[in-house]
Length: 147
Image (tube, helix red, strand yellow):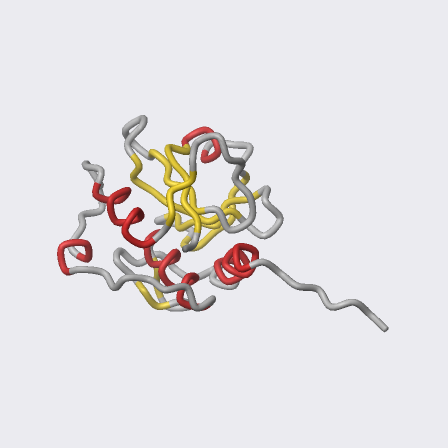
């Protein structure tokens, strides 16, 4: 008899994000395989694993391409649990990162099932995989997890 493998919901969340690699970038996109932005990646992956996600409000859907406030983190706090800084990130962790302005979260991604890569959305490459040891790992502002 073989033992059944049980994956955590966080790992399933990471695997759901990984299925979207290759989806083109589309500002405010919410359709896997057609077009996603970084927030769309989170919301679609969460929906695939059945996480209870509060719907986006109209003010959240009308964000610009250049986030200049803490609105991204406020939106993440409404839908996900913020993780204390002392906790280690792992598969399925949601990481908010700075992009243009140090310390201001302007981009989000999901840590891969292996725990060594970041699944996120690049304007040129679409949904892609990047090493957490590089540029993005050094830009993490705060971390969240599914509720």
